[in-house]
Image (cartoon, rainbow, N blue to C red; front, side, top):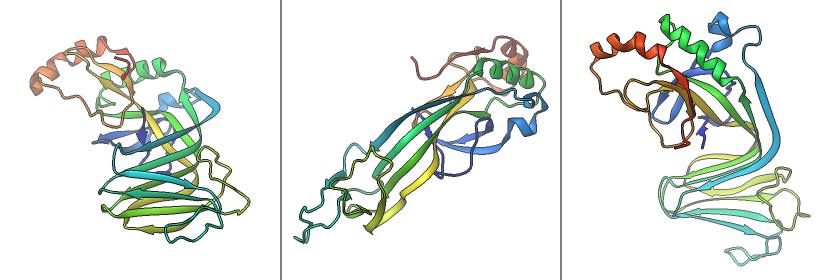
Amino acid sequence: MLFANWEPGAPIELGDYGIMEGNVFVPMGKLKQDFPEFGNDFLHFTPDNSKDNKEFKSSSGVEVSLLPKGALSVQGLELAKATLDIKFSSENMVYFNAMGCTTTRISNKAKLGEALKELMSEGRWKKEYCVVTDLVETEKAIIAISNSGNSGISFEAESPLIEKINLADASVKLSLKNEKDIGYKVPADEGLSLLIGLCQFKSPFLGKPHFMPKFGLTRGLMSFEQEENELIEQDEELNEELDFAQLGED
């Protein structure tokens, strides 16, 4: 699982770093600009050119209808164009569809972790900092969040030649038809940096911090139960025991 780049489409790059506020990543800077160690092409990027479709909707309260050209509308009129209707029966319900998604990753994460461990031992890096190590870009995205139990939004194919909308086909041109009481929307925008994977030093058990990817929309930051003076006394020992592992593969 990945975190949303909030707001969707905001400028973000692999190697950006910052902190988490809840489940929202707040950028603070770029490794290659703020730390000389990461110049000269230190970070290696690996693109995955295969494309996929990512769709999510709240488990209840969201109804998605793909109406073909010529179907009858709610008003009993025949539709001239294929239509996508999204209806919400509760507040704060989410519909999300991203078409033509490609992923690029930092491939030398282990080397990155070792370099950041050295920075932390020098007092130049904080454990709460996260690094963007995975970036998902989409050719087209539709996002809608309801503002009430009577919310709805509709899109239609721009061309009347399209018999039925295929939500996995990013080449289909969509236009906003109408909306009612929508709290937030991304109306079929194109070329967005939409999802990110994050790495951070973590402690899966007391005394063993790890620098590992953060994947998951609801996974929060783990808390430390020690008193502040105990953490200070253990810092040197903990830094020596840092290793690199992946979060979310329990």
